[in-house]
Length: 94
Image (cartoon, rainbow, N blue to C red):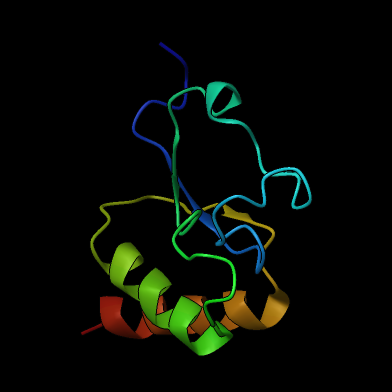
């Protein structure tokens, strides 16, 4: 067991959402993930459109279901992080 048991990573790399592009996107191999769940990775087939607005909605759904103390974002663009953090602050205060 590792120190990251129960951890989840939300992928925010615009290319790593696509299946089969492991080498050109430098996607971390399954065996190196050490059992840490990587979300929003390999969710689309190449050629399918997936824009930032869709990513934000999907990430919000995931985050709103978490019981968490802190979040770490992998390859997250500043714009995406701002929108997501703004949403989580406003929904927590309700």
